[in-house]
Length: 81
Image (tube, rainbow, N blue to C red; front, side, top):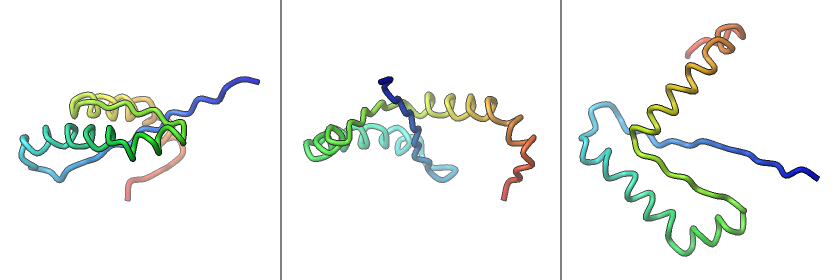
């Protein structure tokens, strides 16, 4: 039987004009939480692997996904709300 691999991307966004110090601190705090024993135990039980990124890497990924999907979204007639 072939293994199933599923990749889900989640991002945390801050309001416009949030101070850069806060933007830079968020990934560090989140990474700390994700390394806590309780969270690690739960992730292990769920067979979930976490990969973190910097704000710039997340921005680049979001832009790449936009470019990859924009034609399909337009062809489907999906409109922003």
